[in-house]
Length: 418
Ligand SMILES: Nc1nc2c(ncn2[C@@H]2O[C@H](COP(=O)(O)OP(=O)(O)OP(=O)(O)O)[C@@H](O)[C@H]2O)c(=O)[nH]1
Ligand SMILES: [Mg+2]
Image 1: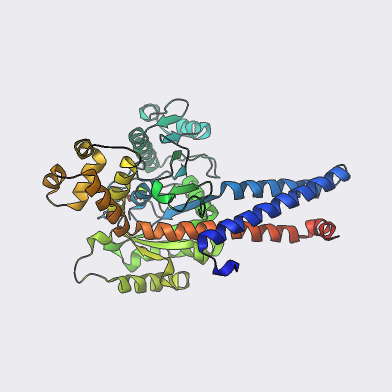
Image 2 (image 1 turned 60 degrees about the vertical axis):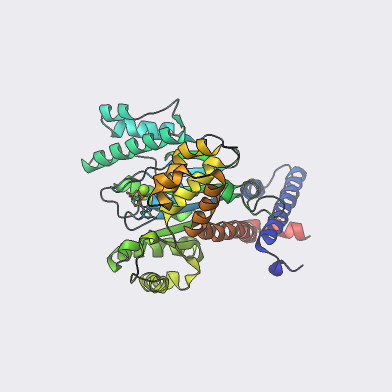
């Protein structure tokens, strides 16, 4: 079968197999050459380590998605919906100042927050002693459990914000590797295409929550970190609030988005218009939203393929319930007491208490699945993950071919052909 006529998932898997094979063969050829010449060529040694690193990246298939927004648009709520757990703090008042990584892996059972030594040291210097001591630094910087993690992140963000407001300067490592990291289990709805025709072989997805470029007083050190993160990820989601789609709002991120797009490519920038649950008759239609985005972001958003209307609060209620019940055999009455069942009922019904009294596991499972789809997050994730996975492999192949074509490696390429 032609590669181009294959279903995406099959094509991606095949591409991955080919690429891995090429890297293994190239690695072997380099290794042999080095053995024969007693490692005489330092360039080859470097090429070998690059090959090995590329091989690892391919095997681990790490994909990353960061969110950015001109304002409070629901970034953290969107990521919580994808995670299926309220790990990231969100609220009506300004919340996120610290960029946070969430790494979703298949083999991670309980969520864990990791606060690095460098981050701990930076905070010790930055915060007042009382404030520093109010933070739960966990066991050697490890905090376990979704609720504990959310509380810890809430306090940390609030302390950092208030110190920044007092014009204190934060001196942090600038490459972003020391920001708080949460490890959580990859939800079942992101693993739907795993298996024989799967598109996420090892299934590691990295989500990055950011304060957004215009968060007042975020401070230079954090700004630099956020910028560098946005330029390193595989995909950036620009989030806009449906209830505040104004040209002023778009203006705030326009230049930022342009810069990001020029680095990671237009195709890797997507637009999420959140809170469409607030749409009332007579409000801006889907076509109106499309026109607004293409006018505001000009050539960065020329087609509607990278625009999704979503409701993160619906997605969060649905995803949270699906995650909480998956793999458990539950009695209806036990299910009704679960916080995620209560949240789902509140999202679904006005008179939710009455409805919850009669709810069954079966019914709520169906409702949650429908709500998940209705939230728009399912569609956005399907497109974004399939594309990300495919492109990640393709990108690795092309950058590696480019790498082999560079002058340092001409000799190696020649020796392979000989
Ligand atoms: N109606 C509605 N409200 C939402 C939706 N998503 C988020 N919100 C609300 O919007 C507010 C802001 O949500 P956050 O997730 O904290 O937004 P954020 O962009 O992370 O904000 P900062 O971290 O402060 O920059 C909260 O009160 C959320 O409950 C949605 O889909 N619909
Ligand atoms: Mg936030």
